[in-house]
Length: 480
Ligand SMILES: [Zn+2]
Image 1 (tube, rainbow, N blue to C red):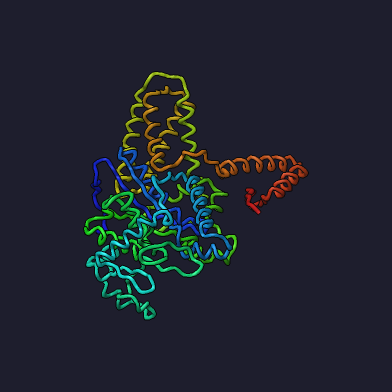
Image 2 (cartoon, helix red, strand yellow):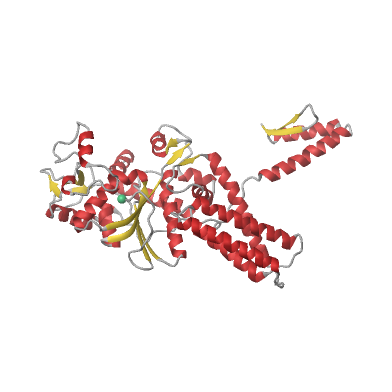
C-alpha cells in the first residue's frame, strides 16, 4: 500500500493471519501459478520458526466463466471440472513441499456468506441492483477507491472504453452478483437467481475466517488492479472502517517462460503442443524441490524467467546441498571424540553465517541472499567433513551437532532438502570418466593397437558421443 518496505507489527502478539488469493480450477496449473504459493509457504515457515502461530487462508474460485466453458466443452458438470483441477493442484503443491492452508474455502460452499455481504453493501448504499438482477458495486461511493493501485477515478473514467455497459453508474463499477443465464449454475438470492462476481468471494472469505482485520494479503502483482483494489473497496465499505481488511500487502512478480509472459503461453497451450510449462509436465521430469529451489534464487517481487536450462542449473546446485546433507548424516553417525579448538572456530563461523541468513529473510524475505548463506555453510561443513574423514582430525560431536542444526533450520525454512532429490546427471563425473576412456584409447594408439582404439571410438558413438582428434594431439568429446 505504501509502495515501500514497512516494519511488520502483528495485530495480535505472536500471531500472523494471512489471506492469499488461490486458483480458478479450470485447467492444469502452470509454473506461474506455483510462484505465490511457494512464496507464501516460505513466509509461513519463517513465522513458524520465529514462534508465531500462523493462520493461512487460501480460496478456490470454483464458480467461474472459464470452469463453465470447460464443462460445456467436455459435456460434464462444472463441479467435475473444478474437483478435478483442485485435485491436480494439491498433487502439484505436495510435490513442491507446499504445506496445506488451514482452510480452503470454495465459492460454492460460501454462497450464503457472500450473499449476506452483497446485501449489506446494497443496504449501506454502496451497491445497486439492476432490473435483470445484476448487482454492481458503485466505485464513486468509496472515497478511497484506487488507493492500492494508485489510480484516480477521474483518469479511469477518461480512459474507459466506449463499449461499456451503459446500465452502470460509472464505467469502473464491477459486478457483485450476475443474474443467471440459461445452462449456467445458479443459486437463489434476494436479488434473484445468479452467481457471484469474482472479487466478492475474497472479501467474504477473509472476513469469515480471519475477521475484520488481518495481517497479510498476497497474490500475484497482476491482481493489484482490479481484483485487490475491489476487494479493499468492498471490505472497507462493508465493515465501515478504512483501516480494516489487510494491514500489509505482498505481491509477487510474474513469471515469463523463455522470456514470454506465462499467461500468454497458457493461451497458446491449446494450439501449441509440447509446451513445457504445466506443473504436471515439469514435475514428471524434475523433483518438486528443484522447481522450488529455482524460484528461491530470485526475490519474490522481481520478475522471473523460467526455462528448462535454468531448471537444470537449479538441479545441479540443489544436488550440491544434498551432498552436504549426506555428509552431515555420515558425521552424526560417528562415535564421539573429544572437542578441539578447530571445532569451536567452525561453530563460530556457522553462527555468523546463520545470522546473515536471518538478516536476509528479515529483509522482505530475500531468499536469493539467504541461499548464499546456505551455500556458505554448506561449504564450511564440507571442509569440516574432509578434515575429519580424510585428514583424520578429531571429530567434535557437540559443536558439529549445533552447526548441523543451524544448517537444517535454514533449509527447513526454505523448504528444501526435505525430499530425497535424485541427483542430476553428474557433469563432473561424466568428464572424469571421459578423460579415463580417452586416456585408455590414447594408450592403445600409442601401442599401435588400432583395432582397440577404433572399437572404443565406435562404442562411444553408439552411446551418442563423438571423439574429435585435435591437431595438437588432444582429443575432445561431444554429444552427437
Ligand atoms: Zn482474491
